[in-house]
Length: 94
Ligand SMILES: [Zn+2]
Image (tube, rainbow, N blue to C red):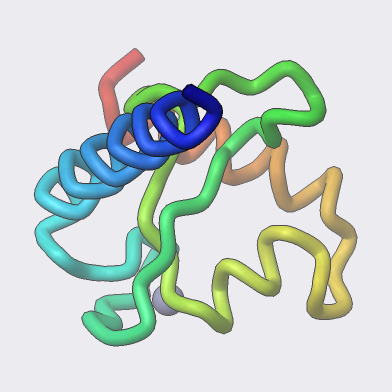
């Protein structure tokens, strides 16, 4: 039973990733970046901060930009997130 729950979660996540990848045109969505390799799904608002596991809260980033966005590379993470969320809204025409 436990395996089935895990499988279900994995398949939901991989479907979400597939949708995000198509929406991103198989490119990194970092402004100005068009990398097509090492793409990972990133949560705009982290799950731990109340972000949802859904298409409106994810974007595709290559590994270096994912690391940068998640603060694994030196950067002022909070300021960067505010900027990126604004950019995403602007891009969606909100
Ligand atoms: Zn990139």
